[in-house]
Image (tube, rainbow, N blue to C red; front, top):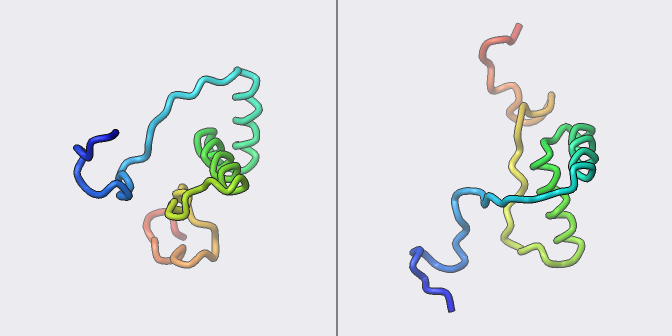
Length: 90
């Protein structure tokens, strides 16, 4: 039985992302990294994307799971893309 020593309720999500060590065959990693590059993701983001998709398809993704964090510059024409301003705008 797990003691509730961390404070808060058990359904409370942690603030930080969980870090895990993953050992992969080098050729599997190279294929994954190429695929990630094709989709403009990091290898880490590609792994999370694929794991979430597999969990969702298996009906095992928790309902309160947040969306994948958006990284990088928003696409042109996206809501709020013009609000940033800043250097480099000509």
